Length: 99
Image (tube, rainbow, N blue to C red; front, side, top):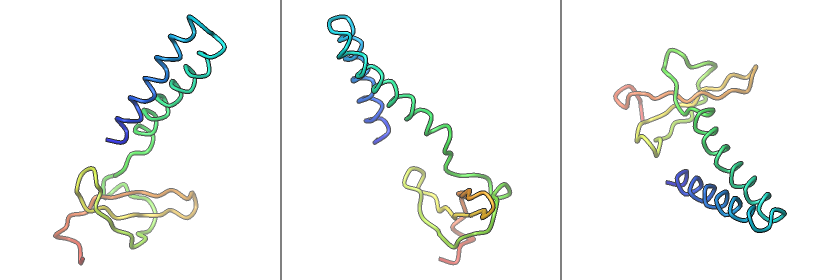
């Protein structure tokens, strides 16, 4: 829901910037650039930061952190690889957990 709101705001700002370019280019360009950047960053974030990986592809050691992913409602465990600083999020079966 927040992602959708950010995308809509970015599109509105970019659209207003595009309209302002016709009337006052000096005022329209920053709005167009900011709105476009907001849209691109929001779309890129979804592609770049995937929440979960398959259990066999998790890298590093489990941190002991577990939480319920608000988007999917599934239990997720966090793994951390100290050499790269990468965190992996692995969906786990609630029947396998001791919680």
